[in-house]
Image (cartoon, rainbow, N blue to C red; front, top):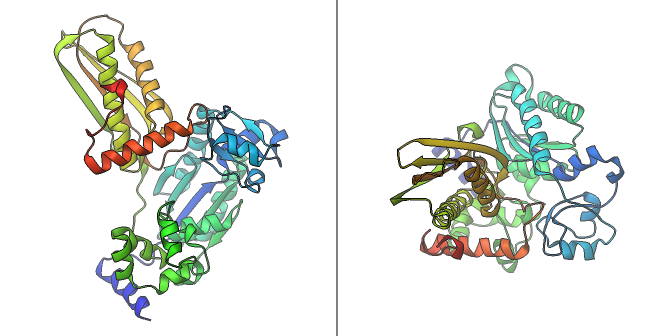
Length: 396
């Protein structure tokens, strides 16, 4: 009872609305599902979407492939060893973004408050809708409409907060729906593996397992101060989630701000080597900022100011990403189109906009395991010693 009392007091003290209605929607095996719309021969077969080389990674896989132990972000070589009969599809970024935007438009037509968490995930705040339509029925009808109009399978979880709804979605898959009534959150979570809790990753999971914790029920019985002592503030967050506590709001993705950097040269220049190094350095810092803040961008803008102060900009869309490689390719493409006057350049700027919350998914075409590991290592150094602590050689 002690923990129930603490949860209640926590809610009252910090003003958490325990009567919220939050829905989490997730398109099932999104990339694979889109490919199956175009090629029905892939239906029912193990499918891998990702880089075709052995050094590539799996961006997505079908449920049939998962039965063999394959999962996203796995090296493609290992995935093909585990499931030799899998069909490899290279994938199409633009196509996936198109279908993602169609789903977003359908949801926004019916729901007043929507957060696009990633290319295939949405959070919906349905609080108060029961007064007019019936939130549960409305969500069911919305899911059916998405399936009918797009042909894509989608699952959703329905509860009082984002954490419980996201976990419920995972339990509802594939192509299902699950409602967790208010007041039953702890009972719903208790028998599940701690792996189900968002935020428990490769480092935290073995640490908790070494403490003898395998199911959420055990976390619920622990003292929150013990969790804080062992895992710091992250331990408190995990304990809250295990007890079904989550006050985070649904934040419309269009309210997210852009981020940008500009560089003014001491002397106006047309040195292409220098210009590209400066742009690479800015991309590196901005991409780190995206990942550090848990965001992705789908719009890149390049600005050039010439020595006569004429200023020109050009922007382009791309699939949601925080990858230096993808962003630099787009930036350089825009720069080559924009820089047509062959005049001395005084200033160059780069802006990332259309930001949403989400984690980078391995690129479908070019990402290699070595590159992903390098990016993680650089991010780790920057978080500890500062953004200027390390730079790629090409940006120096």
